[in-house]
Length: 385
Image (tube, rainbow, N blue to C red; front, side, top):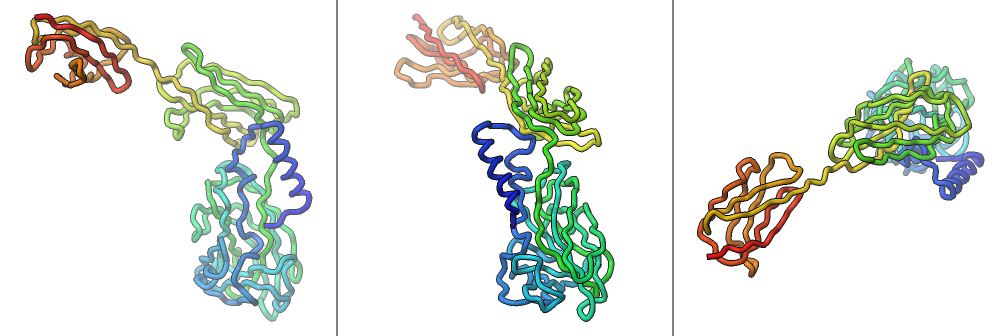
């Protein structure tokens, strides 16, 4: 992958600022800042010279992180100026024929975020006689697998004959795909187009999130967030989940449109379910496009209190009275001797835990333990003759 000096300086500046002023961005470390095309200029390959009319299998064995899957398989990996001129820069370019007879995918370092906007830059080149009857437009797709075209997101204009033209394709990811795919629109085996320099670049952040927190307080959760900037921000939706996978919107707040002034937002969730609860923000643009924040979690696990009182109806029958905040559940009753040996153990449903008949009479001092899946209480008691 090639970067311009400007892109490298911007990347370095952002890394330095992030270390000094930790800003939580709406795109995580798995976002476009980590999403790069692993071999978008085709420089990583095993070819020592021009390779023309390669089968899919031959191409795939020769080029790293690219997969050819066209219906015919006639791929070309070219370095010299023999075929209509050399590459625009670097040492290699790829040429393919029309109508899906040739197609290939380029692997990303991590999957795209569905619903997020991206920009793809690349160059195409048209070549005529004697090698071709003419070029065809380049089509770009997004796929979750390496050997299918996936969803079409961009069709370029017809390539210019005899010259390289830089293209810029802005699209919204239809799926969380990890492969950018390339084929030609129309034509056939006699049509030929060359491509090179595929680079995925970040688009402007819809918002910069300074903070996003959730704090449990008594019977509700306080959810707060602050933005540094916003671009075309129509509204926020606050979503909640019990498993960090399936989220439900619980409230919506209007955004601040486009602004470079920081804004603070907050809501209270008075319907917090028990257990670990996850929250995230869904930021929605005026045109309906949206992005998600990182997930944050709070622990609303209820602490169950348990206590009991033991009395005896004779030396072989225990009377147990339970108290505390617990639902109907199973208890494990264990009686230990003073030497630590188990003299009795059994499980009971709480509704039936009242009078317990022992296997044999007891005499002396013992320890009785009542335990649930989340709590355990032990008491000493004495059985007198």
